[in-house]
Image (cartoon, rainbow, N blue to C red; front, side, top):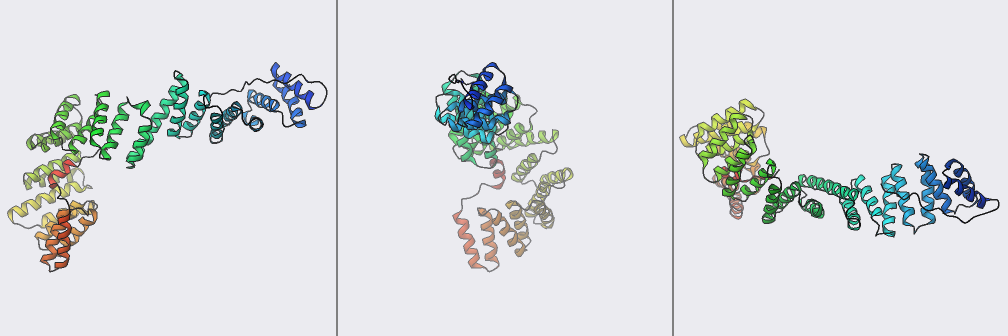
Length: 454
């Protein structure tokens, strides 16, 4: 904290007795550096006349020099009261309050100093530093920006300005995690002058714009982040996820093929490469990469899900069952293995016109372990439908719709079941909803496309 405690203390020569003489003696002792004697005389002076600003200031400085800043506060406050238009008086009071551990009280004092002398970098620095200590990072950045405009080459101001910007960016990241995207963008935009050449700032800004459905600007910032830090694996993953989400599959594939060479041990890069292969209709290549991932990381659940989608697209029920049982053996508490196994049995039952009971058993376990996923209930409802257990099928389809009101296929199957069970009005209502909804991407592709940034 920057202070101006050593203000010029002047008083006309005074002679005689009473508080005037005590003031003269006290100021003489103060100039000589004898604070103990000065304090005795100045105490007598202010007892006789409490309106002497010079005396209060000398008392405050002496108490500070003697290591008693808490005893100096009242005197600094009196100086500010007596000299309300003196920015130095308010600045000194703020510095004292900082020293005594009262930044909340110091802030309004520094702010008053800034109002009285807005052209002084010292007061803006003190305002900004205090705001930074109070974790009011965005406000701190603005105050320090004012100081920086006045003193552009001051290293202390520059360092504090950068620190405030970095902390504000951390706040923006927390907002992003809380899905407060517009608020996060406002904060990041404010600190752009300090962080525009930072890979982290560009990457986060790009992700925010991704969430705000501003793809062109998002891509520019994600690309800039990777240009600034080409060896940052997370930046590569983020821009790849963006490209996959917007179905730029060829561009994503090219990026992850390069990324695999740059980050040969990265499971995440390989996984996104596999997705890019699959989405570019090169499923055998994608399956091969997924198998490579599971060979080195048997617990990487996303690879099981993606591989299961491939087997479903290939109508390979036996492979789905084997994959599900493999993951159940690794993680029994996860719904994924049971769902894959259930999907495999469902595929075999529909292809071979055999019992759906093994599928129902596995799918019920998946729903029990993970009840909040609409497709789990939808698939179980389809299995019950096959077995002509219509009441149970309707129950599961309703759960799917409660979890995802936009699930057009669930509305359609439910309409079919209502019609079959004689509930024509309900069937018509569900069919109308189905027709009003956009058609979903086929389930096997949807899991791969709905890749979002972390």
